[in-house]
Every structure is written in C-alpha cells, then in structure tokens.
Amino acid sequence: MRLGVLDVGSNTVHLLVVDAYPGAHPWPATSHKRTLRLAEHLDAAGSVRSDGVDALATFVAEAAEVAEEQGCQELLAFATSAVREASNGEAVLSAVRQRTGVDLQVLPGDDEARLTFLAARRWFGWSAGRLLVLDIGGGSLELSIGIDEEPDVAFSLLLGAGRLTRERLRHDPPHPREVKDLRRLVRAEVAEIVRPLRKPGTPDLVVGSSKTFRSLARVAGAAPSSEGLYVQRVLRRDDLAALVPRLARMPAAERARLPGVSVERAPQLLAGAVVAEAAMDLLEVPVLRICPWALREGIILRRIDRMAAGR
Image (cartoon, rainbow, N blue to C red; front, side):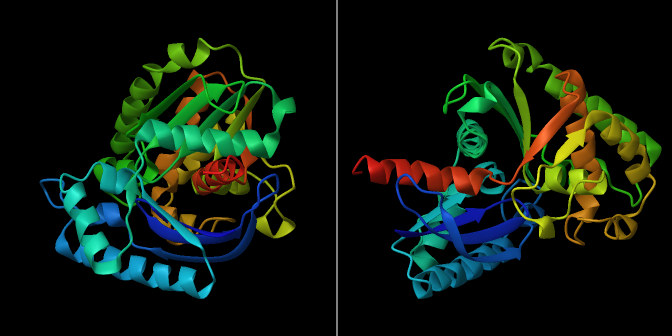
C-alpha cells in the first residue's frame, strides 16, 4: 500500500509518502513540506488566528492533492502540540475538514511519545534492550522508556524548542538572564519525571529523535545527512554542555551558518540545546544515539501492523 502521512507540527507541516508492506521496511517515495510556524499564529487567548487557519487549510489541500497524484491509497493526517493546545483546536480541525475534506486527528502527548518509541524500537531492534527515547519538538518534549514495543511509561512536557524560544528568549542573542531563567524552568520541569522514568530500570540504549537532536549532533561533529541513514551518529552530554553557552552568545543568523542548522530552525536551536542538556544531565545520560525515525514513521509502522492484522 502507498501511504501518505501528513504531520501538522508546531513549526512545519510535512507530507511523507511511503510504500508500506507488512514485514518490510517502509520505503519513502516523496516528501512535501512547508514551514508554517502554526504556533506563532496564536492570539492572546491561545486561539489560532484566521490567517493561521487559512495557511494551514491551504497547505493541507495542497498536500492532499500531492498524495492523490502520488497514488496514495490512504492519507493519515494528524496534528500535534500546536493544534492540541489551541483554545479553538476543534474549530481549526472543523475548518480544515470543511475546506479540504481531510480529517486531521489530534494526537495526545503521551501517544506522540509512544509512537516515537515504536519507531525507535523498530529501528534499533530487540538487541538494543531497554530503550529510553527523547524527542524535542516545536511545542513539546516527549520521553519514554521500555523494553517492549510499547513503553512502560511515556511523558509529554510543554518544553518544545519553538515554544520556549517564543516565550522565554525574547532577544537575539538572548540576555544572559533569559538563558539562566530558561535553564531553571526546564530543569525543574524535567526533574519532576526523573523518578518515574528511572523506575522501569536502567536503559541499555538512550535515543534522541527529531530534527533538534539531529542538528545538535551535527553541530557537535556527527556525520552530515549526505552520508546516509545508516551511519552511527551520537550526541555527548559533555559536548552539549560546551555548546549551550556558545549558542547563547550567537544571534540566530550566526547559528544558521553552523553545519546542519537551517535558517528556519536556527532561532530555536539554543532552547532545544538547553532542553537536551537538562534531560541528559538529570537522567544521567552521557551519550545518546540519534535515530533517523521518529513520529511519522511510528504512525506508518502502526498502520502496517494493522494491515498485517487485517484491519
């Protein structure tokens, strides 16, 4: 089956088209995305403004057309933190459905964590043992741990790189006090879930998923994406601890010149680094492996499993 997966995130709306077969690796066929920064289209009451709804509906219609042209038999469309937390989220979903015919499904935060965990488990396999998976998105941070394909515990915290940049780092480059206050906030939030994440046992492998972790690893010296998916990439806590103050001194334009950092992602790289450092430090993670698969792949794998079960 050729599947289309449409991911409406806080920063980007991304259509991924794959050829999916039970028992086989899902093979990407094409990708179509646009940076909408939906979370920046919120008013003071937390509602997505009409311009944001219009931009979203326009791209969803475009993505649905691309999926049809690519021969997709099914379009799996979902939204994460930006729509999930908008005070008019239901109205946004209704408007998109009326204008495009696409029924966006909102993923709860813990489901987001569980599906990302599934993707990491399938990528690294059973030999990886107990996995601890960290994923930093635009609006939230997901953490999960377990030894099976379903994690024992899964959490979603409102510590996304885009959210924290908008709310806490108002200057470019940020004032030292802003960075200090951000660090204090993030560490307090992560500390609340350290105990339940440790309860299932010590992880055999810690995994970082998402563009933020990939960019941080690249800046710290990991292989570029041009070397392919199967090159092992890691991010070390010591490298990250040295990188945070360096990023804090840079304006966004200078961060965009770092290897693996796009102009769109550069403004929120510092907040992402602060979150990553806090999580790795408080969870006592000296090094993590970068996983090329994340939430979209988890959605695909779950659908393939249902295909195999005849559903």
